Length: 143
Image 1 (tube, rainbow, N blue to C red):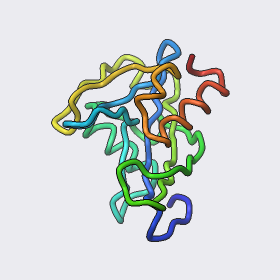
Image 2: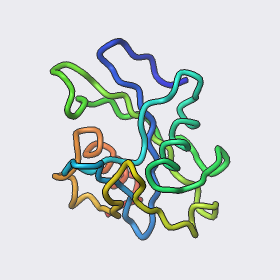
Image 3: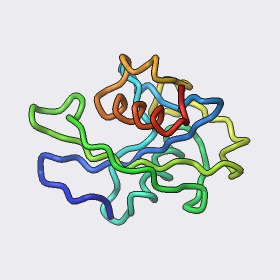
Image 4: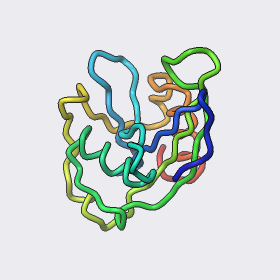
């Protein structure tokens, strides 16, 4: 399970797939904001299972728990939700050398496009995405 939450905190999991100092993000149908592949966990899922399922649904990537490692949790204002609603986003990086290294993410029925972004794209991201980009830069993973 993930971090404790209350009724005003949305618990989500997200995938951090980094290649060539860029991280994979998606643009949801009809939206102009970039998000990390991910979403809410189903009641029976762990955070890592939710990240794997959401990545498959949004990008076609087929990952296993062995492909991922925890990166931390971001707590920020939830984009597009009521005032005071927060998002607790548990982040998982994809280990180098795994199945995702050779896979090509593609937009699914849930998203309009996939993009490889850097911190220069932060103005196109919701608060949790901005904070994640900041942490990726601080970790030396993304420009």
